[in-house]
Image (cartoon, rainbow, N blue to C red):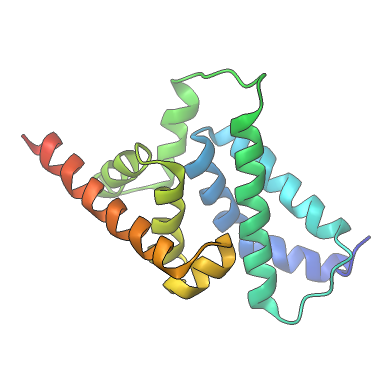
Amino acid sequence: MGTYDESSLSDMIMKYSSMILRIAVQNTNDFYVAEDITQEVFIKLMTCKKAFDNENYVKAWLIKVTLNMCKNHTKSSWRKRTVSIQEREATQFFVLPEDRYIFELIMKLPDKYKNVLYLYYYEEYTVPEIAELLDKKINTISTWLRRARIELKKMRRNSDG
């Protein structure tokens, strides 16, 4: 086992599992795959030999591992593209129709934009923190955030008529 005992690992799962699941659903667009990725992320944490200085580092590590696992899933050649039940279930996180509508628009954006929007608005990371987390320049993250907002506005205008 890694640096966490059963109790502290259980606390981490309770605290971060919904965040990891949301990131995974957002990146895979498949609720069942996202559940698998969530479990795999915590297995990695459980077997991780790294000692983290504080909980913010743990959260950043979990996000980075989740994003990497989603990329690996997306890149895998055996992955079959299936629409339908899984994609519909991915939107069940959102109770309000407006939230579901925004989620569906966000899902049409490139992954880099989806991730930046999520980290900025939902996890409330700053642009420099996102840049460090994703190993990108601050200007790159600012540009992606601006472009994502512009794209969302365009898509919303186009769908409104």
